[in-house]
Amino acid sequence: MKKPALKALAIVASLWHIAVPAAQTLHLPTPSTSLLQPGGETRFYAPTPGRDWISGTYGCVRSEGHQFHEGIDILRLNTDRRGEPTDLVTAIDKGIVEYVNTVAGRSNYGRYVVLRHHVEGVAVYSLYAHLSSLAEGLRAGSPVAPRQILGVMGRSTNTRTPIDRGRAHLHLEIALKGNEHFDHWFQATYKGSVNEHGNWNGRNLLGIDPTEIFRRQQIDGARFSLLNLIRNQKEMFRVLIPRADFSYASSYRPLMRRNPVAEKEGIVAVELLFNFAGLPFQMIPRARSEIEIGRDYRILSVDEEYARARSCRGLIRQSGGAWQLTRSGRSLLDLITYR
Ligand SMILES: [Zn+2]
Image (cartoon, rainbow, N blue to C red; front, side, top):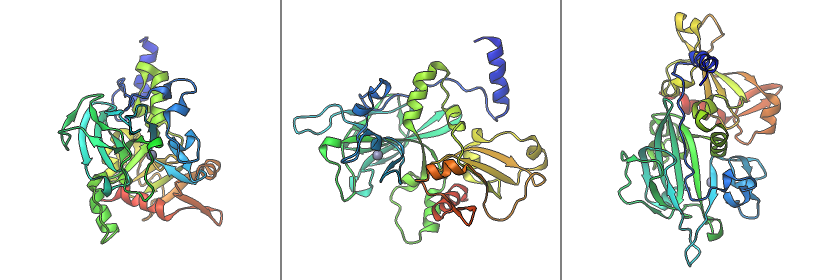
């Protein structure tokens, strides 16, 4: 690498609390690779019944765009004589098994596996759902090699409508974790409700678009940085959290921008920058002298056009000219900031 580029990278890195990121390769989790071929989307995604391939992608793609799909559905490539999928499902990167749900009937994910990866100083999670069987010996705490077999693709789920053979798929999520103490938050918030999956309830995983990751990696090659991709999400709205010591802030320090004023005077609040999906992708520490700090969350800004165009997560809404957090928006903030 030439020196000016290195210098530019060093300047960028100095804005953050971390070192210059290193390249890391993430692998597609099934034998299907048509995502990376021009026009290959139709063969790659499993659409919902009666819809086109877009319904198998990530984002506002369900229920006429009104419902959010937190991962991608990768269509089966190979089947046995009965038409059941035989594709092996493999780890996108080296990591540690965080969770294995062996009982299909306990989740709409069916049988699923969650892995933790360390990417450029950040804990990133991958989730593999609807498996028909799980690799032997897979249990929480086991190390996993890149492309290690996790199980066989299937269509296990506990939803009333089954997944039929023709659209058997792997539901893949790549996500950050909302809170280290999700289960405590859940019990405190939904008294009497059952959370069978501890921290590995899907609500605690804040998904990033896997397609964007694999495509960006294909374009950037050795320069690919997942951390930069996360930090450069498109901002939809910004919220001030009137506290500095919450789980997400300490778990995701590499997403915290440097602010010498707050570092010197003391950090008493944190601005969270959200993408359309409700992922806090950057944080800005704030001092008392810099910003008015109340007791409650405060929306600082909204990209209105974008918020109207991509509203499927329903986290904020406009009421009497002002933008407010919806119930689910508030619930997401409660989850992220719960101690
Ligand atoms: Zn899915």
